[in-house]
Length: 609
Image (tube, rainbow, N blue to C red; front, top):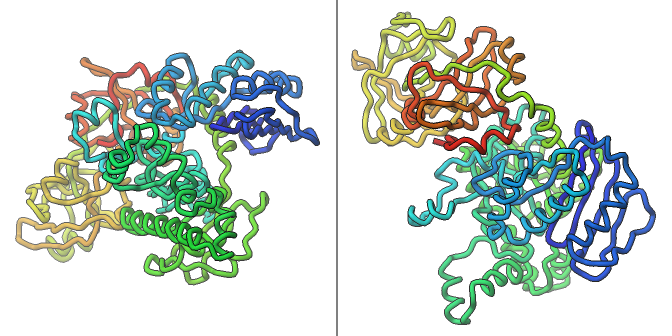
């Protein structure tokens, strides 16, 4: 499946025709310095660049697309994939572009003034020249839709955050998602088994905590200005500094914005430019300002890595990507110093001698005794966009052609291993059945326990059988606050680095669990036959559309669990059921997370309750 990928930036355009399943480039085109006189077009099949007679995005595209159509068979194209930077609260997945989508993107332009307007110009022009195929927007913010509320929220008045949708959105999501998956493939495991910190370092830079395949923290916020020190952007700054400067220098908001976005960062500290290569060279020649800018850049990133390791309770791999991340051994060396406490130890020779090549898109620069893998991964945002566009095209006709899924409410409960059962009830004790559960072979037990947390206790919490290899306590968000516990949202069985709790039986016996308390990730049990019917596989993440009497809503980030012993059923906790006003017998329709065009009609979303 061939996809035309258009990545339109503020001063450049990249066009590539990509075979989505293999990543093979059929044709590429690069245009630099679009706003300067006579921009140059560089086609991969031509020895010399072409000169465009006019500057500006629209003029360049008007000149470019007819040439492109003369070189290809347009009937071979299945779709046009557009990189879109800011999706706001509207778009958390690849989306088929229509006029409604364009209008929503236009409303977000003030949040990404350097990126969304050029992307929109490219979309409108491409729709004129490629009328017969779908156009798909792939949003930089989409991967970060899984950020928990605590990571998205700014401590501002609710009346303002609600009115203007002020929250942290994150960026570079296409790259973070792609390199996390590529790193997991290199380590020969599923990305959903790993805690990865991905560092996308270029003129724009951000870092992301990818916990078991989901973005749970990222350094950029409502705009691409927050976070790391960047080429010309300040990154994190005390808001009081901006107020102070605006008052002392009598600056307008636009003038302050120019300072923060175009005059700060590496450029502002070094006064030698924004290119990391130039700064490193000047630092080697003795420039103290350039040396300082390197120290500040590395310090800020190292600080974020430590923070994100704490957020995830550890880290299995740290990934460097982007122009700086892939090519600067000096930056990698500076950032990775003194991370031994994380089990992250760099192999200096591997790092210094590294030379990335297309045939080796992942390189390991870890020392042999490093518990945390240190990887350099080549990002490929164009290929990632082509993959997501192709997947959407392949699945867009599957919606509402598959059976409805029964929805069950899962109350707080406990799973125990046999050792813990005996510690609470006596040697050789076996759990007794109170009643069978909907899932074959599982049952609610007569035995109940009291959960004793730091703040309060919950009595008569039922144990579910049979016993399991490890202890696990599943509670709701309301229970979490009542007990005084900060429980992560996890799939069942993923209890590593989760909080512990005290279990007490009616006989007074107690067991102190060191870990095991989670808020269960909403999930669907299904058999392998069901999985074939729905076109999914074990541990896929989907969306479920639910219609009740009052409103339509969509549950996002629903985990698929497949086993021959499972009966088709979706499980949500009591908080979610109450918030959604679901009644007994509720059902939902599976919507692939890559399918769009239907969710925009729904009134409510439940993503991270």
